[in-house]
Image 1 (cartoon, rainbow over the protein chains, first blue to last red):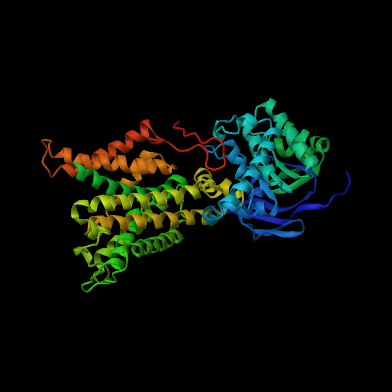
Image 2: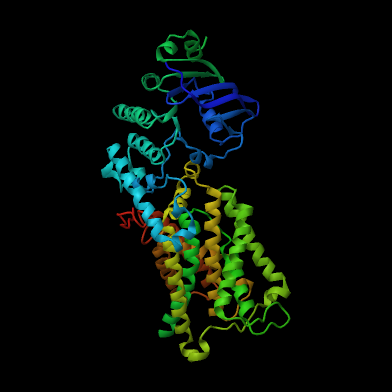
Length: 257
Length: 316
């Protein structure tokens, strides 16, 4: 594998919850342009690391850098997207009582119409911008084969399409780094391939870096390279799918000694 | 009967204004604000103090025009809404509701006790009803009703412009999923704050319109039942998150409420029991609505954005 530049770097990151040491001296580097997998047994600290990166939890100690600049401590969740970091959630979150189209329209940051006064005094500007986003949103729905669902409530979609919708929302903002929490959760097997294919396409065509947390080994083995293994809040090893599958330490961590 | 319709137009419009403000907070943003009666009282007292001709030892007697009274009411209620928001918006749903209820009561207690400000429990009478000097007493309710209705329509128009926009979409998103909205780069606290303040300003205008219609107010003119839970019922009855629904809800519920007073006179029940029975009926109506028609009479609109194609109103 050719050497790429680091996009995200965790340096000696620690997180305590009371007496529980959820993340211990984690040192992780994510290379730009990869689909990096983050695996580990339950309680290994995978989702906690996502929450630390995005500022939902404060770090107990350590630092996180994004493109060489300090990201944490110091940035709140709502600032992530402005820095081109998008995060999806383990249980798909969508705005169930809002249509699929509007689920996409809400994503772009710094829209004119987000300022209340523009809606009174510059409505034409707001409309014009909105029309542009709407065009883009329809294109994205075409890419996801969901054009006919545009006016459907997001809550009425089946699990797999919700994941696609989440990808669609991400495409509206075209971030540099995407934190994908369990893209396989709640997705029927047939749909999983579609989700994976779209992730791969986005990675190749738009050069979006993905960091994927996943329980389903099959998903992670065929989607991710490299794969990081996390055990008890610290990095155990790193490698491609084959290396990880044959690593005894990893097998021990999963099955116990 | 004609007089009743004029009164319905006045009170219906007043309630529609308060309900529109409340609908922004509860229907769109999901803020279960229970200080509505306090905010309405603040608006009412502000307008009365600003526009009253004589003070008689308390604050006021500035004799300013009605419109200044309304602007003042919006300012003071908006400011109070902002203060309440800064104190409570970080709290979770239930705690927010209880804290705002307490702060609403605090406003009421201040009005009860501060003689220099509000004349305490004696209240303030002789409140000027705008334009009544020109038309005489018979027509004054009609003129005021039409004026109130027009002001209500103006507020409706201004609100529609902001809720059917990216701004309104964010408010609905916050009601749906706060964490996701935050992750989408929206500053949830700021949007909640804006909704609370704008809603409070509108509620303040409603409180002021109420005072000028009644002609006399005391702190108990703005009780929690009449000025908080009744508007809440109106929001829910019309359809949370739908401004048209709020107006329909306000007129229907106030119509039913005021007719029940007339009907009650013919019932074989002692008059002392009537108010309690009406309150009971309100409770039954709320529960029935939640059970059989949770989206309200009209329901909410499917799409927020004014540019979205599908604007069908749904009720499922």
